[in-house]
Image 1 (cartoon, one colour):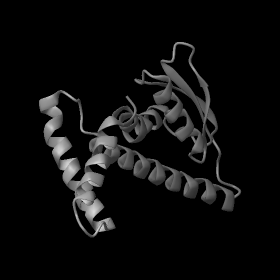
Image 2: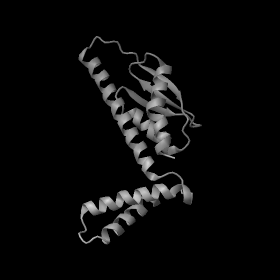
Image 3: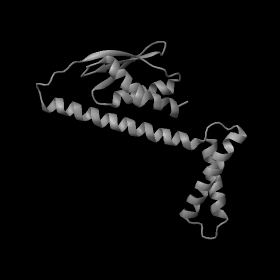
Length: 158
């Protein structure tokens, strides 16, 4: 958050020193400020550049949207074909998330994906119990969630 505020300050400073004070001046100052901050982060021991977290968040959002749309079509196809088999099950998925925010984000994304629901978080926060309408392979389901959501959540929420 400090890096972002510094970036906005640098953009405003850049805009202030230009006579026109346009949105393009602010944007130019913002981009130049971001480059300056990205270059100075390692030298000042400020950790990771905040822009990377934004990119990771966009990747997470895209992966979640793709999973939700794919699952939505699967559920819709089962609704439109009433004879389609339903194989409901509850699956225990071991997780490698450590903060309550990470666990909550994953649990909510699973719940918001059609056909799945997070039923419970293990007391020691090492696993989620997931209800699914169409289980074919529990390991495959868990691996898919780990690959598409869990790994990206770890990069965004620390």
